[in-house]
Image (cartoon, rainbow, N blue to C red; front, side):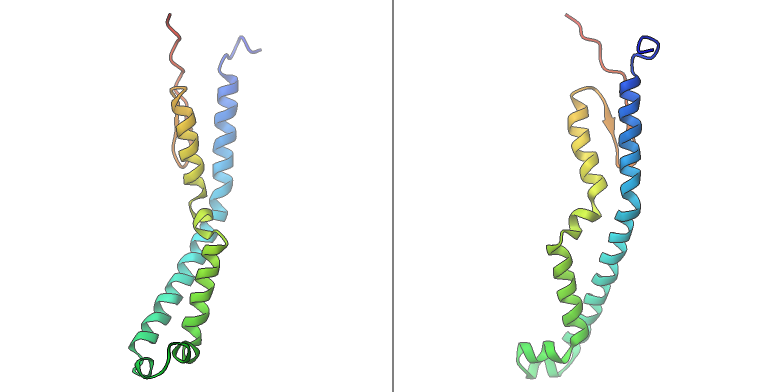
Length: 125
């Protein structure tokens, strides 16, 4: 059977890598939405915090206490980054970049969505 399709391993690898990257896409989309929502909340809270005339008159911690929406959203955003959301958002791109590096040695390439395999260059002595 291997003689009939000499690149069956290559096709199986391509199929598996494509499935794996496609499997990451829904989770990546959810993490992106969470990051966007928390970022917009933080930006909105920051705007309200900065335009409040009381912010300049009171201490830093009092101004944060007076703006709980900004404080909570900012803490949440910082917590998400410490939890590694920046890696989860770009996980398929990281995997594709690492695969690109390895596959380049075998005259193959891939992108963030799929793997495209070209036939390896024949070894010439």
